[in-house]
Image 1 (cartoon, one colour):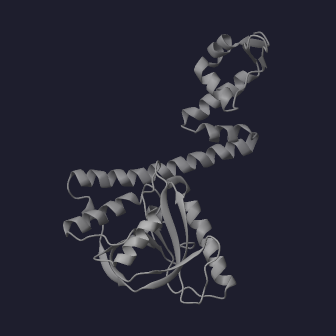
Image 2 (cartoon, one colour; image 1 turned 60 degrees about the vertical axis):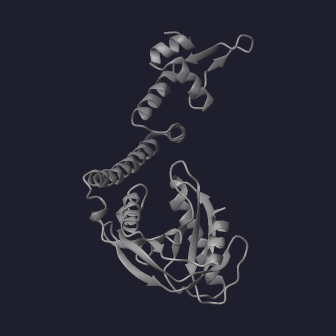
Image 3 (tube, one colour; image 1 turned 30 degrees about the horizontal axis):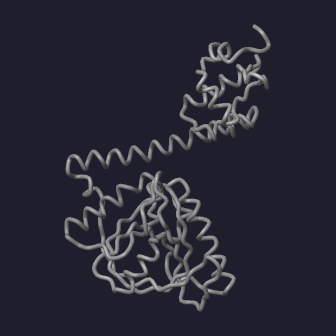
Length: 285
């Protein structure tokens, strides 16, 4: 076997198409060993066949190209650990999707929404400090964690106290394809002032329908059936949603087991003042 091969030869030996080789070159995963500056002809080296095989194997388990690049920069046990961690995340996603599939089956059998117990409660007016951002489903958890740390840090620095559980308000759609506005809120009765990206406002009193959620169901997409069940509950009773949907987080989050109740998904319903409707429009923008 020659030390350098043409693109066609390398394609045949690596079982990668020429199109794939060009893509992997563009992504910096498998650049040619040599490019003729006059003709642009590409040549690959013999040792690159092993690299090509590794890329093929990683892609076979569905690993995204960006993740493939990260793994290829590692060696030995570190690379093997990175692959194991990736597959662990895939398995967790699969389990979450399984729960959604079970709910979808129930929807088609007209029993899906009934799988969840919907409760009601009155929530008093709350003074909250908040941070808002536009995020998709993949970055949602990281945003909520970072925003919460910012808010609690601001509260602590000002000598303030928490007056209720923190919550995240979803002013728009958050999905794999949509970057909805999300507002993380920390209630406080302390005389805290806004600063930088930290806002201060009153969350109006309201009545809400809610479902208690276990820790293992709090991620995306496992939590989506909870939202659907609440929408069905409101629609069946012809109750108008008056404020944006929200997730309320309880203090046992860090210590709770997978099946323990750590959060509520809530939909406020009823009527709301004109000033609050204006605020919601500004928040959604």
